Structures are given as C-alpha cells and as structure tokens.
Image 1: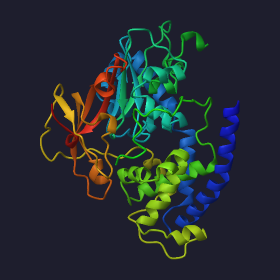
Image 2 (image 1 turned 180 degrees about the vertical axis):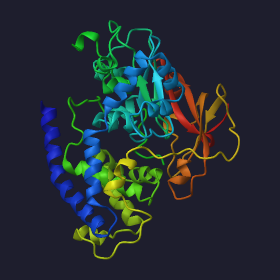
Image 3 (image 1 turned 120 degrees about the vertical axis):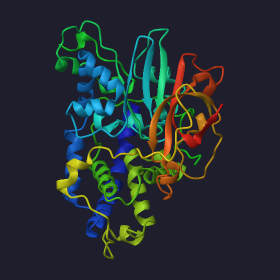
Image 4 (image 1 turned 135 degrees about the horizontal axis):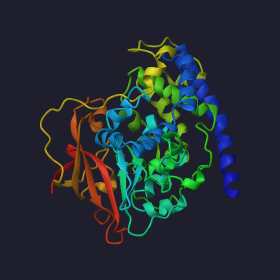
Length: 208
Length: 218
C-alpha cells in the first residue's frame, strides 16, 4: 500500500510539470508548421483503440489451430501475419519463437524498449523499467517469480535481447483441454504476457 | 556509449512490478508526447537510431528518475534544438518566435493510417555475409563513445551464430548522421555461463542481434 501511495504522489507531481511542458512544445511545433495537431489526435486514438495485444492473440490462436499457418508463421513471421489481413505490414522481421516443453522463451530489450508494437500494442511500463531490462538476461526465473510463474523443473530458458530492428513474439504452448475450440475462444487464452514470455497462456478453465 | 541505458545484468533495481489493468497512457501528455515523436519521425528529420542516441545522452540521474515518456519529451526538445528547428528561447516562451524551416514533409491526418506500421530497415548488401549459422564467433571488446547496439554484458564473449537475418541499417553510423552503411545482422546465442560465470543458471541461454562489425571468428 505504501508503494501505491508513493507512486501516485510521484506521478501527480510529474503530471502538472509535464502537462505544461508538452503543451508548450506542441504549441511551438504547431506554430512553426512542423506538426498538425489533428494528426496527433488520430495517432493517440489508434494506439488507444486499435493497436493492441488482441492482434497477437489472434495470430497465436490461428497458429494453434491451423498447422499450415503455424509453419508459415515460423518460416516468415512478417509475411504470415500480413497475409492474415490484420494490418498493412509488420516491419521486415517479425520473428515468432515457439515455447515447447523443453524451452521457454522470453523477450527483452536491455538497451531501450524495443517491442513488437504492431502485434502487441505499446509496451507496458514494467517492460520498459530498469528491473526488467536489467534482470531478464541473467535472472529470468527470478523475473518469472515476480509474475507468479514457476516453470517445471527441466525447462530451459531462452532469452532474446532485441538489440536490432528484428522483433520477437513468443508463441506460448496451447493449454490442455482446448481441443476443438474455435480460434476466437482460443484467442481469449492468450495474454499479452504470454506473448512476451513473462506469463503462460491461461488454463482452459479460466475461459468460460 | 557505456551509458546508464545499457542495463543488461545490472543489480539493485529490485523486483519487476506489473500494474494490473494498466492503461495505454497514464496521462494525456504521454499520448501527446508519443504522437509528437511519431509525427516528427514521419517528417524524416532524424533516424530511429538518432532518437535512441538522444535518450542515451540524457544525464544518468535524469534517465533513472524520469518515466519513459518524460525521457521521450526531453529528448524531443533536445533534438529539435540541436537540429536548429526550434530555439530554447521559444520553448521558454511557449510560442514560436521565428518562422519554421521547410521540412521534407509533414504528417497530415489523412496520412496517419499509413504511418502506424514500421518502416523497413533492410538494405542491399555491400558484400557477402562473413558468417553462417553454426559458426563460433567472439564479440568484440569495443567501447565506442557514441551509439552502439552491442550491450556491455555481451562484449568479448564466445557464442554461436544461430541465424542470418539479412542486411540492415547499421545503428552505429545511422545514429551519428554517417548514413546507413548496411551490415549483415546475425542472431548470436550464448550460454548463460559464458556471460555470467560459473554461478549462472545452467539452463539459461541468451541471444543478441549482432551486426557483423561486432563479431569475429572464435
């Protein structure tokens, strides 16, 4: 509770300073003819309403239920996702990495915050935070514990540091007891964190 | 640069604290800041690597004590002033004091849907790839003062080339206005013990995306 209080306090004091500062910057840039504020409104609206992890979840659900799509996805992620018709293009190099009983994958960007925006939306604050960026590469099991996740003993961990313009998305394992489910129902099992590798897909029982 | 941004393997930052039901933006200014960055990126006045380098050059205390979007906002002010597109006096006044310069293009509302996907960073190769999947390589022990994408924890380490990812814009030159200088890009895989020593989790493997100038045969 103390932590929540402190966060709120820090956030509040930064808010007023930053609101004024951003307003001044936008005003200067608009008056100089560098930006169109109406375009800014549309960008914000797109990230608030259109781009998000629901896209990645649909890709994973299709990979779970369509073996040909899964093969194409692992072969060339950008091409397969584009053919799915979810968006115009996903950059040149979307690389899906598949979890197996032997290996659990986790995605990080230790140098900044590279993240597959087109399929997962904007990254959560924790993904961009110093604790995650510092620890994911040398203590991924500790990071998973912070998320309440324990992997079965014997599972290897593979961490992908996103140090270039290639982007990764984890293909989590399909939960047991979901045979015959529709893609739509399967997609409800796929959490954002399961596609970063800090979580697993939900249990069948969690989706009514 | 060996800056505070290069965090892989550092200790002392504490636990990862996920926020349940996190909103896309925590305040309206965060969305404005993101949108300003996207709009000016569209204008073609800088490369993505210049913007990353802009964040890395923030003083370490500012870097650590600022939220993600606060860093973006300060970086945006700094780059616009550095490029001579706005003046510090105008930021202080909160209004333009001089006419703007001509940009290659400005983002209109009609163009927004076309700007939401990523640009392309692959480029025609300047020569054949020096390495192939399966090659053992050693990352170089380099410490450039300027931008690089070879993290400190993975320097002077032996790994294996897992995949060749094509030829890409080279961040080390693109960040400092020296052009694309396209380089082959590889996924290089390291054993946890190679990176972190004998006490490393023995089941851990870590990969980086390494540009060809970062590696040599091992």
